[in-house]
Image (cartoon, helix red, strand yellow):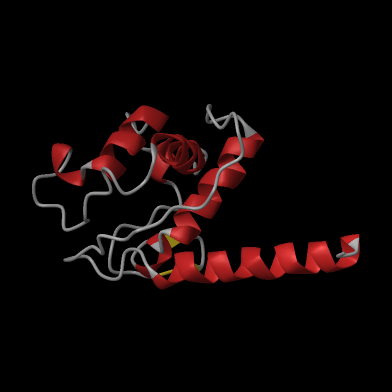
Length: 137
C-alpha cells in the first residue's frame, strides 16, 4: 500500500510529465501548427476576465500551448508575433474578441500568420485564455 507521501510524489511526477508533454507540442512557428496542440487542464468555473482563477488558468493555457514562442508578454517570450503585454488596452479587445481571435485569427486580420486554434483548445480553456489576455492592460 502506498503512503500518502508516495502517492503525492507519484502524482507530482505524473503532473510534471504531463506538463512536459504539453510544452513539447503547440505553436512551434507562425506558419504551421501541430495537429496535436494540447491545452492545460483548467480549474472548474473559469469564466470572467475579473476571475483570478480564470486568469491563472488562462496563463497556464498560454504556457501549455507555447504561445510565448511567438508572443511576448512583459519581458518574457518571443518577438515574431505581436507583443501582448497590453493587448486588452486596445479598444474592442474584449474577452470574447480575444477568444474569437485565438480560434481563427483571420476573422480579424486576413493577413494573420497565426495558426487557428479552433478545435485545438477546448471551450473551457479558451474562455480562461480569453480571461487572461483580457487582463493584460
